[in-house]
Structures are given as structure tokens and as C-alpha cells.
Length: 220
Ligand code: GRF
Image (tube, rainbow, N blue to C red; front, side, top):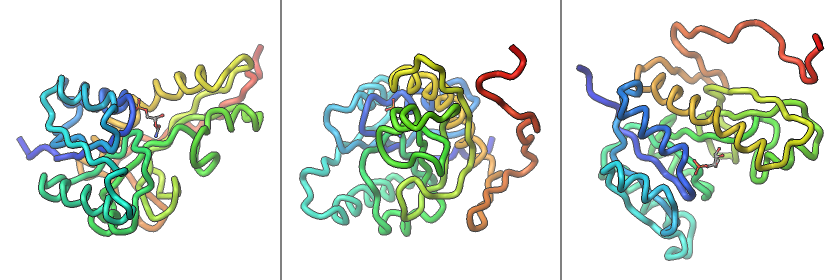
């Protein structure tokens, strides 16, 4: 068997995406091992999930650093010492600096709960509802120097329904996040992902069916 991809997961919150990745590693559908979980938040639920799965954890509290760069250096050092191949941001609520990206070129990925380039940043489920969008979704992308601007690897689309609140929409999106994030990592583990500028090509990938989605549905 070939070597498992060593990943470092960075999480600040409850860690449901981390859990989805743990589960897929455990059931063997993801040929990766989580070498470390790092958080900036001592209260992150992600720590408990990692502990339960026997994964080493590290808390590097950003409040202990006066400069963003110094915090990033500390995180990069820990990831390098752990010899990770890929850095997975899973609800990591810190903007990372160029130092970080230079240390792991094309080796940092993120998941965002909207269909980028629409609605980058924070509170994006509410923004999509307020805008009156009919669809939203989630995006796994490479991390570059901007906020939610890197090349797109996978997206999943969900409808926005008339009674949606930010919470109900977030839950519908999260369900898809838990599917596409492990899938994106598996594609990278298999060496099938190539980035050229903004274009990400996936070797022998079955593209989406060329069918349009409409919301409201047209055939009612
Ligand atoms: C997810 O919605 C993710 O897209 C965003 O932060 C949230 C993290 O959720 N970046 P969890 O901690 O994985 O449950």
C-alpha cells in the first residue's frame, strides 16, 4: 500500500468538518492520516473530537502573539515538525499570511460555505438570503494570499428555500461540506489535482451532468 497523505487540520470551532474527515480516514475511503489538529481557540470542540480519535492536538492561541506573522510562524513550525503534506483549514477563523502560503505552496486548502466568488468572508449564509439568491452551496479551494479567492477544486450547490434562516441554510450547506471536503482531500491524496493559474484540473474526473438546476422548479 502506498503511503497515506499526512494532513494537518486547523480548526477554531465545533469541528464537524474535521469529524467528517476523521470518519472517512477511519472507514478507509480517504487515504490520508490526520497527523495533527491545531487550533487557535482553547475552547474549540474540534479538540475534543481529535482527542477522541487519538489524534495529536496543539493549541496555539493567537492572543499570545502581538503580530499575525509570529502566530503564523509558530503554526507553520508545528506543521513542518509534524511533516504534513497538506494543510486543511476546517473552520479556521484566522486569516493566514503569505509566510504560511510560501511554506506550503499549493498545499493549503479551505472550505467556504458559499458558491465562490459570491459571498466571500463571514456570515455568508445570511448574506445569500438577504441578497435573494436562489442557490448557495460550498466551495473547496486552494488558499492563496486573498480571503476566499484561491482556485476552486470542488463545489456543491443547494437551493435557498423560502423559509430559510441562516441556520437552516447553514445546516443544508454543511451536509454537503461533509461530503465534498473529504472527497477533495482524496483527489489530492491520489495525486489527481493539478493547479494552473486559476484552473484546477482533476485527472479522469467525471464532470457534473450538464443539466441545469432551477429554483423555483420549472415543472410544478
Ligand atoms: C463551516 O461552515 C466552514 O465552511 C466554515 O466554517 C464552518 C466550520 O464548521 N469555514 P465546523 O467547525 O467544521 O463544524
